[in-house]
Length: 379
Ligand SMILES: Cc1cc2nc3c(=O)[nH]c(=O)nc-3n(C[C@H](O)[C@H](O)[C@H](O)COP(=O)(O)OP(=O)(O)OC[C@H]3O[C@@H](n4cnc5c(N)ncnc54)[C@H](O)[C@@H]3O)c2cc1C
Image (cartoon, rainbow, N blue to C red; front, side, top):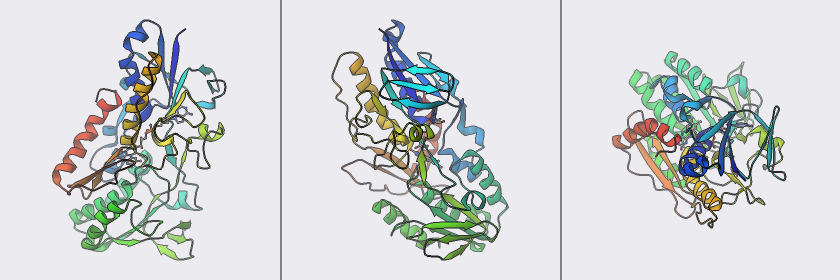
């Protein structure tokens, strides 16, 4: 009997996983013993870290977009469909058109910002967490020569470094434009420091002081008044803005919520080492879709495929699953448009930001190009 591995979600984690499986199980697929199916609900694959560089007008949007069918290895059967239910008891996925049975399932359905989480936020804010949002923000920033930019953050959200990065990049952006003294930059964060990871907060704080970036902690948004252009916090204070850049709380994919597989935010309870969905032996979770208390990042998805892929292959070949996820994450930290730091960490080792340098910014720029090899399962 052919063993069918279904990968759900054609973003970073799903595409890497399916391609790695397709490449490494080439012989078994050829022999008709294994089938690798990738189900994607869009043919547009966007490298999301590119949104930062689109907003800063450093790169055109097309630079970060590929057709999914050009990224997927020939050994992988790519299906475009929107899954509406995951039935883990019957080992089957349902779309409006069809059923997809599986022996092994890898869920990689990602996360997305919930712009309805705060009244007025959708109408009153800008963002760089969607393609349209990054393009609109780029145009607003290009026309701005004075005024107030307020940045708000809610949790959980993907790429925990991105809010810090954009405010530091904006400082450089307006300096280069010669109007930094006329543009107020105010960064806010919901807890008692400017980043959830203390070493990252310690790395950024001196930059804020040196570069006159205002900050406010314990800042929790209650509502936005788009007409008056004010953000209202839970303690009732009003904060005026000309541009409000907001990173709202994220939720998991609707299919996870509708299938009742997630926690209250739609993230799947996942074993932190095996990456199996809790109380399941044949459903694995990769990337933002997990409920793990680690950064939701493309690098996280990448390192997780290095666990899930060999474990599934071992099972298919009748060998034990021995790979374990260490919690590894790697993130660049852009400090301006020209230099950057970097952190790597895992469950046992906290991050220690590397010395900020031009070279690390260059590495990030190079990785932005190498990503496509990664997605293809080559790197
Ligand atoms: C501004 C920004 C900057 C970032 N910077 C970095 C960075 O520097 N470094 C880094 O490591 N990460 C970064 N990230 C985070 C990174 O992009 C995500 O963590 C990563 O894409 C997660 O991969 P994923 O596969 O879990 O989800 P995604 O890549 O979002 O893919 C999920 C896919 O599942 C599909 N899907 C969902 N539901 C269904 C369904 N029902 N049926 C079929 N398909 C479905 C979606 O359409 C999507 O294609 C950044 C993100 C943003 C927004």
